[in-house]
Length: 89
Image 1 (cartoon, rainbow, N blue to C red):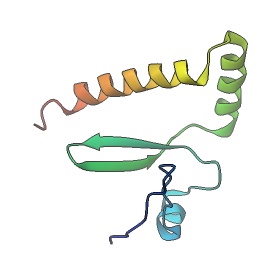
Image 2 (image 1 turned 30 degrees about the vertical axis):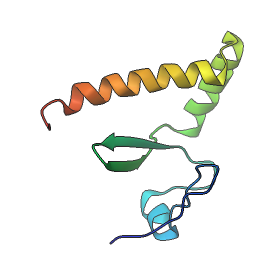
Image 3 (image 1 turned 90 degrees about the vertical axis):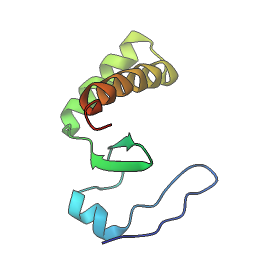
Image 4 (image 1 turned 180 degrees about the vertical axis):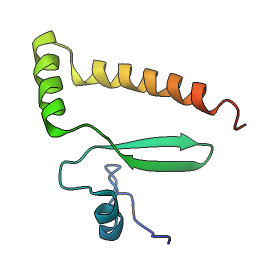
């Protein structure tokens, strides 16, 4: 099944209700977006809420900024993606 959604000027996208329900996404859920050529794969971020609370507390204590953490996550995500998809090309 395919759905069409509009991306807002802020870069936000509404995930259709049927997909959110099937993936178990609720308000404030985290998702992972993986890019493969011109295809984006969306999947739930699989960490329980307690784990996320612990991570938030630890990050707050380190003094890291969201921008720094985002850069680290993006670097590692790109590295992981290249390692896991090198045979696809």
